[in-house]
Figure 1: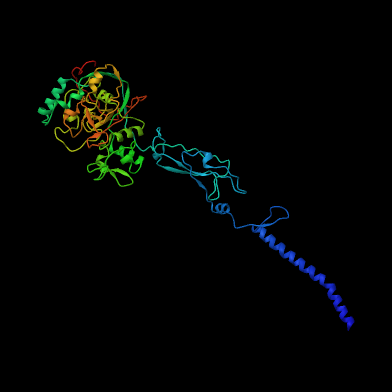
Figure 2: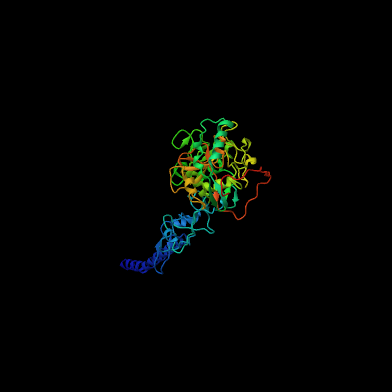
Length: 462
C-alpha cells in the first residue's frame, strides 16, 4: 500500500511540470491573441522595440479628419503672417495645414481705386486641399498666410465726367448787371424783398485763370448717395463723413428731417420713393458732399471752377446764354411745383460743355469757405490761378440757385452761403476731378443744342 501511494505521488510529481507548461502556453497564446487584436484596432501602439503603450481616445485631429472639418483662420488686414501664426513645434503625425482665410472683397466683386473706407464684405476662400489643425491651436510653423489688402466697396456708380479746358475769365459781376437783376426779380418775377444786398458779394468782376479739370455732367442723385451711405454702414449719416453728419434722414429726431427722401430702418438706407431715385440728393451737409466725392476718388469743385464751367465760353449769365428762360431751368417761376426734376431734365438748358442743371434744380455745394469781401480781395490781386477761397470761415459757398428760389439766384454769378453742418432741402452737389484722358461722348440720342448768340462778356479780362 505504501508502495502504491509512493508511486502515485511520483506520477503526480512527474506530470506537474507538464500542466505548468500547458498553462504557460495557453497564457501566452491568449496574450498574443489579445495583443494582435489590440494592435489591429489601434488600441496598441508600438513605438520602440520592446515597449508597448495603450493609445488613448482618438485625438481631435483624427476626429476632424474623419468629419472632414477644415480649420478656419481669420486674419485681419493689419496682421502680418508672423503675428497670425506664432512659432511652435509641429504636432507629431498632424498634417500640413493650408488655412481657410476669410478674405475681404468689395461689393459688386470688383476692386475700386481708392482705399479710404471700412471693409464691408467678405468672401470665404476655400483651400485647394483638405487642411486640418487641432481646435485651439495655431497653424504649424512654415505656413505663409495670404496677405489681405483692404479695398473700398464698389457700390456707387459715379456720374460721367466732362472735361473742361482751362482758361481765363472774368469772375463775378458789376453793379449795372446786379441792378438789372434786382429789377427783374421785383418786376418780371413778382419777388418780394428783392434787394441789391443779395448781389454785392459777387462784385466786383475780376480776372481769374482756371486750369483744366473735369466736372460731373449731372448732379449726384438720391440713389447714388444712398448707395454711399450703405457702403459706410448703419448710422453713418450721423457722423460717418469725417466725423461729421453726412445727411438728414426722414424722421423727427436728431439728424432727421420730416421732408427728407432718405429712409433708414436701423440697418439699411433707401430712397423713400422711386420717384426720387434719379433726382438730385438734398439735405446733405457740406461734409457729406465732400466725403462722397472723396469716396469715389473725386472732390468738390472750387467756386472758381464752378462759375467758369457755368459761364463758358463767353461770360454768360445763365448756362445757355444771357436771356432768362423759365423753360430751361427749374426754379420757383413760373410756379413752385414743390421739388426738383430728375438730374437729366432740361436738356435745352445745358452749358456749352453739355453739363445739366447748373441753374436751378438744387443749389450745389462747392469747396470754398465763404467771405462776403473775397471778390474785392481777389480784384486787388489780379491774375490769380485756381483760387481756393478764404483759408477758413464759418460758412460754405453753394452755387446755382434751386427749385425753391427766384431766377435771381439761378444766375451763374450769384453766390449763396450756408452753415456746412446745416443740410437743406434745396442744396445738393456734384463732383469734380482731374481732366480725363479722353472726354466721354454725349449719351446716345442726346440732342444737339444750338446755343443762342449772346452779348459781349460781362466785365473785363474775358
